[in-house]
Amino acid sequence: MDQLLDILTEINSEVDYETCDTLIDDGIFDSFDIVSLVGELNDTFDIDISPVDITPENFNSAEAMWDMIQRLS
Image (cartoon, rainbow, N blue to C red):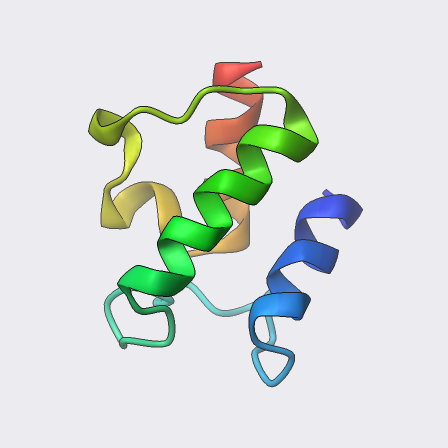
């Protein structure tokens, strides 16, 4: 999870990823951020995030992303 938090902080260091659960819903991440994030997660965690996985539910919070990473590992 620490690696994920480091990656997210690189994208936007002003967000409290421990508590925020509206990264997509509130427009904190835009489509460019998501594309960058998907590539970084694929490389870092050796997973394959498919288009079907790119949903607000999987990217609204660090916890949701971590759950997705664990599921795809």
